[in-house]
Length: 137
Image 1 (cartoon, one colour):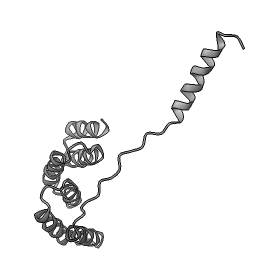
Image 2 (cartoon, helix red, strand yellow; image 1 turned 90 degrees about the vertical axis):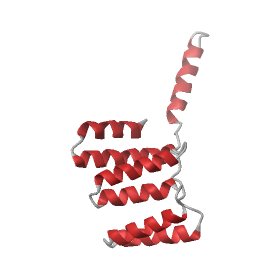
Image 3 (cartoon, helix red, strand yellow; image 1 turned 90 degrees about the horizontal axis):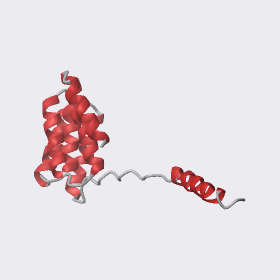
Image 4 (tube, one colour; image 1 turned 180 degrees about the horizontal axis):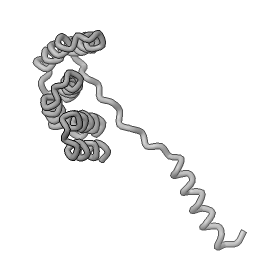
């Protein structure tokens, strides 16, 4: 092998290995270490799955009274309101979650997706595009 070919081969090998590297997505945040909050969240999930959206919302609101600065709970309530067709409230709740999320990019991206979907369902297509774009940043 010539001395000029060696750097090219090493460069190609390095690029191939870099292409194999996987970026691990941010882990989904845990909703709470508080057993009462976790019980309310689990109950709300079961109620929502059974179509009892109002009961699920009430339990999420109870959990938020215990942990009002928990961004995961705000996001859960935002998703529920989206499913209930309360699009403006879903958008506002997701924005509240983002304000509390700190540097949690996973949660922020999920919130931007809720905001995007709420805007889309309200017919604000430009606003939806903007939100979905922020979810991908």
